[in-house]
Length: 318
Ligand code: ACO
Image 1 (cartoon, rainbow, N blue to C red):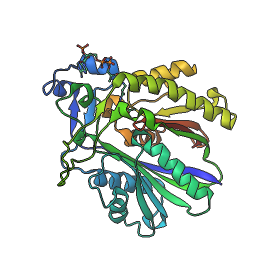
Image 2 (cartoon, protein in one colour):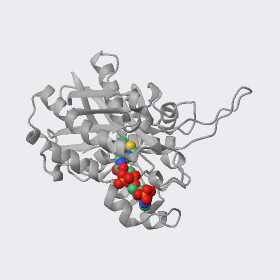
Image 3 (cartoon, protein in one colour):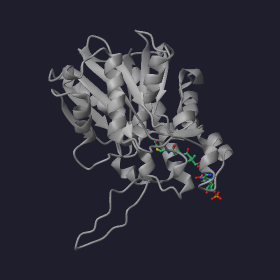
Image 4 (cartoon, rainbow, N blue to C red):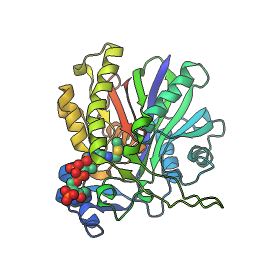
């Protein structure tokens, strides 16, 4: 018994912000951003919330899976930018979609969140506890970036993606996942400020050592993909698509090169949405699914990497 994705959905904010528009707010240019990251546009919330986008994505995924919300046993939402400290985004989604039999909770693993969510659900399925789940990545990173810091505000975007998964005979074939808290300081964002009688802190935004994150990603992503391929006894040529977290096109190109796999097998959409952290993999999967790029039986590698540090890869059969 394993875990199979049976439907996908996504929801992006309506407002598109281009690199040229950003250049009116900070000292940057379309040329600088697109040549270093592959990003040309991102979506930014105006009226949308993280929970609302997650619920919309979930509804579309349920429709795509031909599944009723009442059949869902478990909702796992991966996010690092919740609208509220509590209730969790997952509980808000449960209410919005009417999944009244589901247990719901959030997980925090930054850009690896969707992948870690799939693996968490897989553990529940493997233990025979649940049979049907929703795994969602949703982010409103526009509220975590310092809009005066050109080194970070150009990179991120908002959005949500969701997958309905069920216990099945084929699906997830193997995975690896890792954390290294000792390197956590290269990419941080502190929580809301403390104002108690003993101390005060200042609110902070995303802070990143871009070059260290880059070095981490280009080393660890190919490494963990090769580990999964070895674990499952699969040749890299037999993978139809490598679906990587959409942080940066140069990271993905470098991973392709190190793996010796043609870049065409690495679909990318960061040009339209920027880096949407936990949402990036399910948003891309949903686009591929709806564009007819996925055929039953295709083998895919999913790989996420991000703050924590956290990273991992999973091999699935579509
Ligand atoms: N526009 C114009 N100039 C800029 C901008 C900008 N938006 N941002 C930084 N610069 C300037 C810097 O000030 C610096 O100027 P200086 O030389 O006069 O001091 C110069 O550009 C070079 O800065 P670097 O930080 O060295 O630029 P680098 O070539 O490393 O590119 C980048 C930065 C794109 C962030 C790169 O390090 C990278 O891709 N890192 C990976 C990080 C990433 O993708 N993070 C996403 C979040 S984490 C995740 O999802 C895993």
